[in-house]
Length: 294
Picture 1 (cartoon, rainbow, N blue to C red):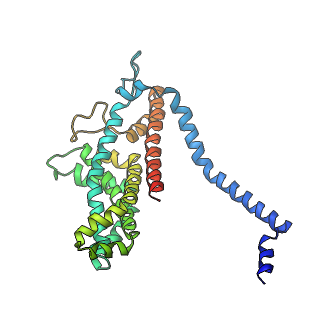
Picture 2 (cartoon, one colour; picture 1 turned 90 degrees about the horizontal axis):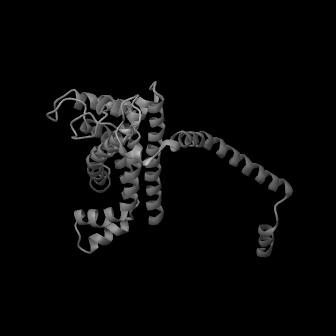
Picture 3 (cartoon, rainbow, N blue to C red; picture 1 turned 30 degrees about the horizontal axis):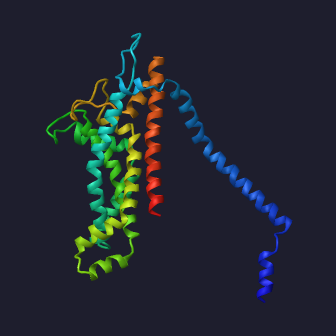
């Protein structure tokens, strides 16, 4: 009997089955190529339009007045503003998001409050970014809750933090769930209390996956435009303090892409290359961390 099954397993497929298999593989490859075609076309056009004028001077100079000859125009202030607002948003959302996920998994597992918080995070993750921008505009820009009223980097960072928060909470929750229960029991058997087990065992084991979720959240908000239009606005100068209108790459691209001046259109393409590089680099870094962990 075993020899019969061995012969069946090693027997070559019939011509019809091989043709069917090759045909299905060809269709799968074709459909995959069609799905990737829009993405590749966007990447190609951005690189074609933006790379020729992407020089070091563009990355280190301020935008020059339109029409001035012999002055190098750049967007260093937009890079500075983007890094500032994304960094502030990360400082706001990462600690709060990780602590919320710890509560959902380790402390409030199964209770009503945890279910409500999880439901709210799921809804918040699906809220359009422009709605978040309007919310931050009403809460921060129009009010004096921070002792200051107006467009600022803090208002923009607050809007980006609201967008990052559900991503960090949900990804950290899943990462904590993947830690085996045996590790928690082993820690308790060695005399560790619940806080020591959570922060020294569970959190440490889930740290690579948490880092991946954080990096994906950063990549997600790096290219946001609508919230910053309502909160940070824009500026042609260096960022001197977080309570002033602050430039960003995404808003600069939005403004310059619709400009009537060709030099500003070209700056928009060059800034698109930089912003695309930041997003791709962040995603690649998250993939690298995940692969090393696996």
